[in-house]
Image 1 (cartoon, rainbow, N blue to C red):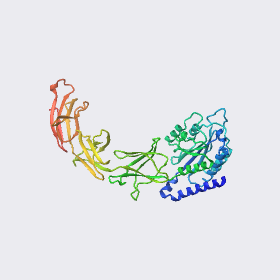
Image 2 (spheres, one colour):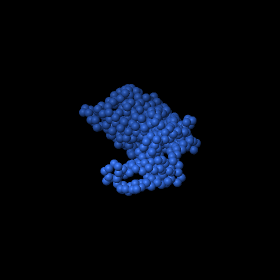
Image 3 (cartoon, one colour):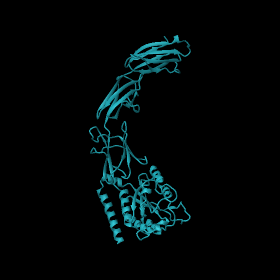
Image 4 (tube, rainbow, N blue to C red):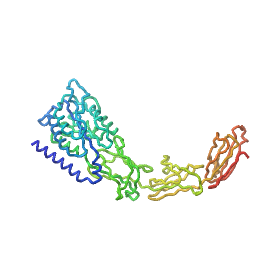
Length: 464
């Protein structure tokens, strides 16, 4: 009867994997070429000799796992390995460094795993933390592989370690994806929920079912697309860098330039549905959505409001030789600098109002500039003129702009530049005050008044 149950389970698994494969489109098939590596971390502690539905747990677990891995022989791009803990040293005494890689990753190693499972004899304690730490070294270096640990246990940590902390470290380092934990017999969900996706196996049949659930989730075809919505709630915004982080570990999982395919639809992504994600669209300013949860084996839409327009900065002077003039861009009434934009270039911003501080002499402040959806907002400033100042020697002085409110400081002369300084100034009326370094009388201060016009060069000689 038990054999019939196993055949039914394996047939169900075969049909499930086949149906998933048939449903995949061309893009999904491309993704399926990525290798998935499953490392079984198997409990061989002394407690595995305990009864489980009138059979010792070790015999039931290894028989079901042996038959189950046999059914995976034809699954493409899947590699298996087996690590055991608790099978080398009997208790007492308690030896907590008891874990070994029995069968490393490789092609066509299912027979080796089945042979190793038959030879396992439970002896020792339950050093789960140590086993997980060692498991980090079991995966070959391959940035394109999905590394998954499947922890099979009938008990909790017995050596004082913290398997939750180790699991989090492995995920943060990008060594493994979120592990699976299959608890045999007693329900250990409270202890292992923080380690990974916990699946309870209270009976032999539910253990086989748990393995099926695990492979279904590990090989699932959960997809998603990021819709950057314009002001009409249509996903037309694109060519923006998108970063996707694991919300729990803060690990960067994906980083790419958002793209619309030939049908005008955002490209498809393949994400592990067991994680929550933080999605950042690097618009100016960035748009963030936290705690994104995905529905398993479905196509998910991740939508962010990202209506953008274009800001163009221009100098109103065709003959102006000035280059590299920049402006600080801030959201209206905000202190944070969003961008430093160069004149003559265009930049995209989220729709809304912005304050612009032109890094000219003098500084020019332009408040509340509206950037609208799919529109080019042009901000034009008058072209500067050139001021050439001839100094009588080293000294101290400044340039001020004449305003209705009084003098506005613009520029301080370099006290180590001896005779001539040249600079660009916006059109306006100005005043220079200057005193030579070696004069110690206030009345020796020099003062000059002058005007600047667009495109003109003005020379002010402080020697006369």
